[in-house]
Length: 253
Image (cartoon, rainbow, N blue to C red):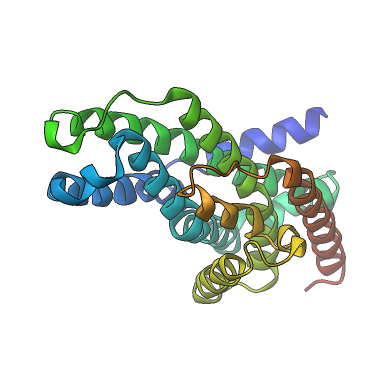
């Protein structure tokens, strides 16, 4: 356990002045800022979806889970592995008396923590800009539904785990930023098309996140009962990735 914690501490040091940390923080700002501009100049349309604060949350979380989050996860994982490939210290690190799968698990944990940090930052920006929009009376924003924010945020965090597990493995095995981004976008679009069609959707890395597309139908509730299937898929992907990483490095790949 001490060795694992030391590895994770070393992993956190790599976040400083890194591109993937920048991606984790810029993604929420870019999305929420863009939608805030749309709200600001679209009073006549936005007021049709009152209360405005609820629609603000719905639109942001839908866009986040269907587009921005998959792209951000792909960027974080690929840029993180790219940093290791470019660093000579990585070869020395692998010679330490720590199991190969521990190296991989620390990497996956680091990616998951970065994505969770991105979620927290996303919610903070969401609240700040949401309150700024309340200065536009014609938007009919109303009060901030804190319980709904917590529900959406918790569901989104859980949904991101299977994406992190998949892209951590894919970016290790297929080191290409464009392949990662294309996979994320195609995968998310495919999962969106399968919402309400098959329960096998939750087996896809983007399946749980795609369920956020239903939040505009306010009479429906998020399928929390399916979350264990998505979490199980994430665990399977982590185990398979760790096994593949261990095997490939033993073989000198």
